[in-house]
Image (tube, rainbow, N blue to C red):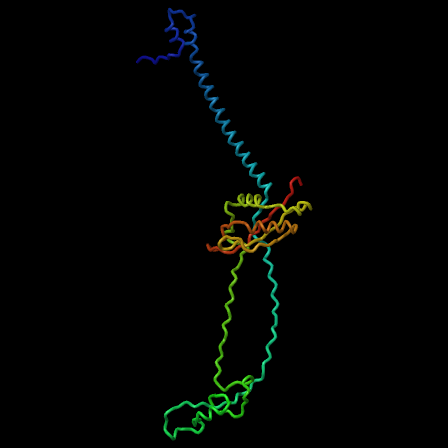
Length: 286
């Protein structure tokens, strides 16, 4: 079986150019083609490796720059969300005003004349006290009519009561509305739409530095607490720790304009939750 021929070998090159002009240049190109090919492959591999490493380095640098930008934004706009620690201050009990009781006149039994109903009965069943008075007798008397004769009473109807069955009607007390509990910490805390980054942008774009506080050089961190209701809207707003009355008032105003949150949940049900929000006021160049 014939041996495989190596077309790049020097023996094959000499055989091809036997009896030809080797000084023309083709012979030299043919004899050095193997070295050129090997160098080309090596240079290509080195170039590809350099491109891959460079692209990896660019991606890593971009990631570092992005992380640095996020860290700088977090330092510039400090908005911390934490659960409320202070319980809402109890409202002072309203003093009960004692109303003067109206003067009650002494009651006496009203003098009355019995009005007898007509019934058909036997003569022996008629009682003396049931005798029917005539219409003339009833017209001539000024005594009140009652269920029986009473000669010992008074005729003054302003200070008397008639002998009759009294019906006592109890007034129904209005049911007190049950106040739902406000939680300080729940399984799923309320969240601003878009997260903390969106909350920071909202505060930065809506806070107006009070001119009086700026003139006086007032700055600092105001701690605001507000209730996130079951449907997500903002309920009661109060200052947990203030700095200046103008800065405190502006922090409360901005919190009252916040859009609806995603409500907090406890056992899968929406509940009312206290939300604590630090708002930092800082003068430029300070």
